[in-house]
Image 1: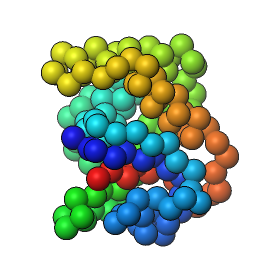
Image 2: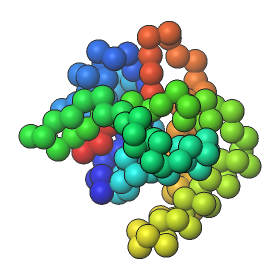
Image 3: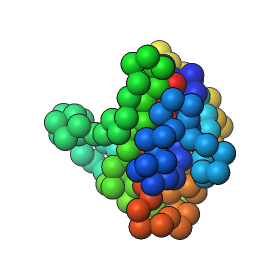
Length: 143
């Protein structure tokens, strides 16, 4: 379970620099917390793209971009497939994903409020749709 979760847009060097303290204030971010980010990224990608979980795990999705054992923090790089799926998702599709995610987590014994799930996903979609420089990617920092 991640206490702090920040999705952000950055160049690879800025993403690496964010490992110990998180993304700096100059970077565009969406902040949340109290959910397993790696599991959520896998859940969202399997649901949106239809890719089997085993295939994603074999491809090492989500990619661990940087990790600090001492600090307990990790930076994940969101896959191009997930970014494309989010970028092309309608509001209805994002709402459906939020409901699906809430139902799945409830069944797993980790309930998430639908309003919070919707805010996380809508914020992430907005961040993904923002114009990015060619060298920028979307990452997730967690601690």
